[in-house]
Image (cartoon, rainbow, N blue to C red; front, top):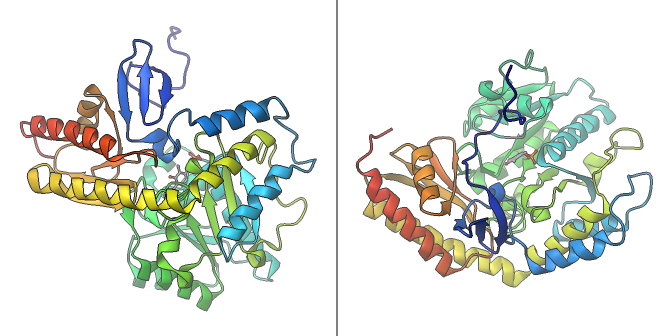
Length: 399
Ligand SMILES: *Cc1c(COP(=O)(O)O)cnc(C)c1O
């Protein structure tokens, strides 16, 4: 085969490449400017090249990058302490490099808990249609989407994917082999679907009744994106989980994930049961600590709530103005978007040409996850570009 591009063909990015970023903007070599309303898919939550994060990386990079977990990493204790103080139910943290690894740790913790409590037959992780939990072998099985599983061998035992929002189907699926229920409080990839607070409380009740572990995958909707540190907090105390998987925004662009658990469910994760080489390295911990301090600040959270209300109002007016293009406004906080009547990918590409970066999600949704630092001016600019493209899209075929 002729040699060409040497990268795996798993992605299909546009030809344009970015050289630098600043706040909510990305710039090409030729200084073309793009407004970034996807933030590396909910990752660069504080914008690009945030001065405090840049300084943190500079300072730490001159001291210590990597130790492995053979040695004590002070930053891990510091950051775990912050998370467990902020989350009343949480007591133990395992740091990873990615969301999928955080999900893996969560599922292992749940199974190990059942095993340790004398219920080793309880291995099934119940998940829901439209879910996304990552791309490792375990995570694609938990995700349950046939598209991600095809060609990678038989589906693994111990994962049951159920219809989204069907409480009766869920109750019927619980058996003496069930270990845990795992759900995203706001489905990201599946089309920005928030789970109503009463559903989360219902899950908590079911888990209590059946000795199941409740896992929230907050990889995309956590990290202050909805205006609370984690999205489940909107549902109050009676929806507290046993474990959350976090990543994406918690590192502000530095690879960092965390599995955060109650002391009870984590008690059987003893030496030898789990590990990672890079997870929790000093460089990631320095950034993670700084990112936590920024995103847990009350004034910062207020800003996210306020600015996301502005964005939502703007989307609602776009829906009124373009009923032939916009079917529905979706999401929660700054994980938001619109279900469209024209092909979402075509709209995304047309917006790219106008200098606005957005994503797509399932159910023909145009997905946005702007940096949490955006202002009303950024919103005005984005809405202007959306209006231009929606006007163009009136000539296009419906989906
Ligand atoms: C992105 C994502 C993951 C996977 O995270 P990676 O860092 O890509 O491994 C898992 N769960 C959810 C909800 C996600 O959005």
